[in-house]
Length: 149
Image (cartoon, rainbow, N blue to C red; front, side, top):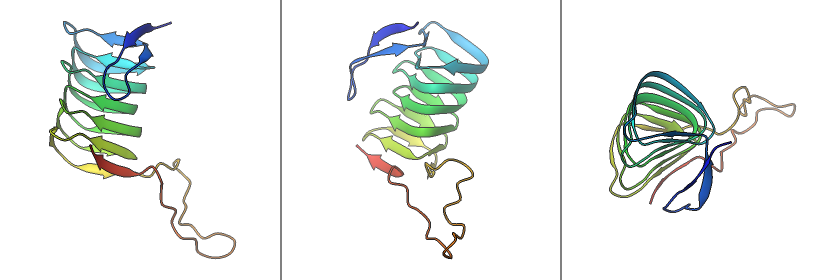
C-alpha cells in the first residue's frame, strides 16, 4: 500500500510513501516508521525509520533520528544517525550531530554541529584484524565521503 507522491528536486520523480505526516500534525514521543516517510508536521521525541525519512520544507523534528537514509529540507534539532546517507538540501536547518557513511550538504544550509563519516561495513567485519597471511591493511570505504553541493 502507500500513496504515490511527486517529489521535486535533484532526484524528483514519483515514490511510494508509506507514512505522510501533514503540516497540522504534532507528535510527541517515540515514533517508529517502516518505509518511505515524509514529515511535514512536528515531531518531539525520537524517530526510528526503516527506510528513507524526508523532513519536508515545513517539517520540524526536535528529535534524535535513526534511519536508513535521511533527507532534510526543513528543520532538525537533534542528532541524526543513518546506515546509508544524509542529505541536507539548501532549505535545511539543523542543530545537532550527523553520523553516516555519506553526508551531502548543499551550499547555504544552516548547520550547527559535527559530522562523523562512518564506515559502511557491517558491524563485526573487522577489516584491520590479521588475516591468514599476516596483518591486513584497513579497507577504505568507497562510499564514505562528505560532499558540499
